[in-house]
Length: 216
Ligand code: URA
Image (cartoon, rainbow, N blue to C red; front, side):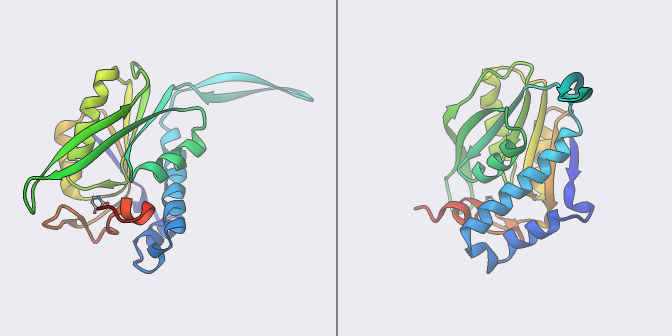
């Protein structure tokens, strides 16, 4: 797996990351959602540098200019519900991408253990397409793996990009073992590790709750 740790090179991304982590600023859920969206927009620019491009002639009022345009069929696939603001950030940049939505949640079997349950799926055909698999918090990596395996029922993508905001080293190591070796992992930042409830430390808390409110 090719892991790209975006915050390794200091940039404006660090400001968005600082704000989503800050326990006071993150209380403003509109700012939280928008910052995640901005991280999606930033990441999209970086991901686009890996695409294939083809020359296209554009007629201006004064002449013709040959430009290189992306030559990829994109599908942005997000894990509900926490993935939605990141999904929108990517879609703001890749405005003609197709979209897939998958629900995945942790069904606890004990205080510290859980299964990943995938239920709802709305997915276009994936054969030969570039799959952007979106989950803002890469904790254990188990939901991304479960979702990826279910998505394969809809075709075999050409290239797979996993896109996260904050990752734990345990989740990265897990995906290294379970996703194809040519997968790209784009992560804004990498933290210390997981606590006993499989939350990322220091992380930011529960991304779904911060974006959309508490659930039962
Ligand atoms: N999901 C979250 O929202 N936060 C974590 O730290 C881990 C999983």
